[in-house]
Image (cartoon, rainbow, N blue to C red; front, side, top):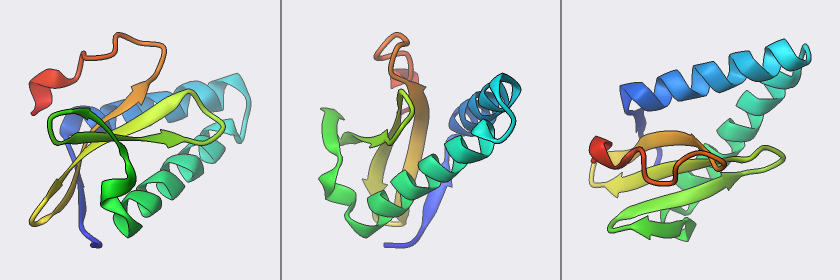
Length: 97
């Protein structure tokens, strides 16, 4: 599987988190984006490996950062629903299904 799409709010979360980390320490935002990219690559390699969260939604943790990538596997590819800070309300993203 090689197709991935983002919910618009997941794109915003990714951008906002990267900006936050970059403001904390130059280069940290780039490291965050790289870690998320590696998580997404792992999802595309083995989409069923993510931990089930709710129904068909799965979660892959982002190494080194307190984030998870929440996604669904669809016939047309992987749909990223949220790039979630794990310290936030756990089910705020449910409306994106």
